Image (cartoon, rainbow, N blue to C red; front, side, top):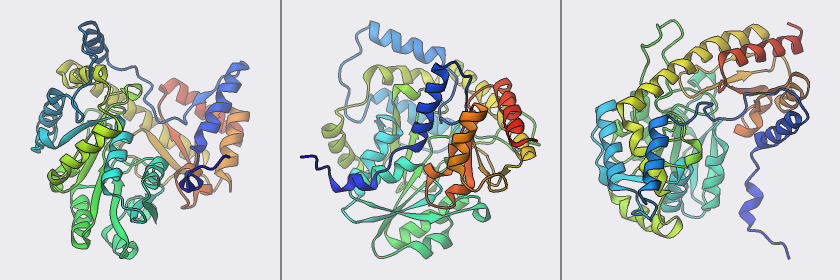
Length: 395
């Protein structure tokens, strides 16, 4: 008899996958589809990282590592925090994980009691709430919009916090909006969590992919502040997927408050044993100067794409109401063009050959009015997408 766990009724599919499946079908039929739906860099993993993986496999470095990861990789990440952010993060507090998703699984497994409530921004990355639900926590949405740059504020936290609230999860840069929290804003949110006796988790997986405003010359890029600078009681999650362009390698990390390191280690030992050993050896090359040089060139290209696409979409009738300071997304208000973003996304795919993600995937806060475009393809293809969209809308 088919009888799944009750929690599965509250875990929704990733709707964009349905669009991606249809896009692949159309491509198999000979259609040219411009992919602006998937949150994945289009660049290959930098060559020094790939070469390090090959060397590791050839030299037999394929056995299990410690549950929290290679000590030398944990130390390399610690050094990276000091060099890039000027923040001392002991390697002992760093756990290597199976992607940022693996980090969130370990964090919520360690912290979420059955029925505990957790505050998350809406719109936000959908898998966060579903991972939380898997560990019997209860995600509660904080609707956010242009008035707070699509980020929670201390006032909103106070408004939504209850006796059942166990903590807060935020993302900076955020998906789907690309907005950032300043260090002062992170400190203020941390202060509320401390006063209320709650946990504070910060998703920083798009760190490195942050951009100065359009009017600032290329090369003068901004660096988002890390929440590690706001206190050693904050859980900070990062990944090798986005800035380091290692999506399929499934490798991330988490900075853990000291008191919880042993708890996370026990969970990792039982749930995953350890992250991929070849991937960890590959990631040691992610911090080499030659690798960083490649990544910074690509960051500049992402910014050029953003600076081209944002005004082009607004000229068609979309409104970019979030300040896209990071990641590689434009979260657009499409209400002047359609009252149903999901139907619009389907229609754009079928009739214009442009794949985008409807707001339905990101929560219940006016999803029908929003659509996300990922600028994860080159400027020439983005230009073709703009031409197709303009023709579709008769602009």
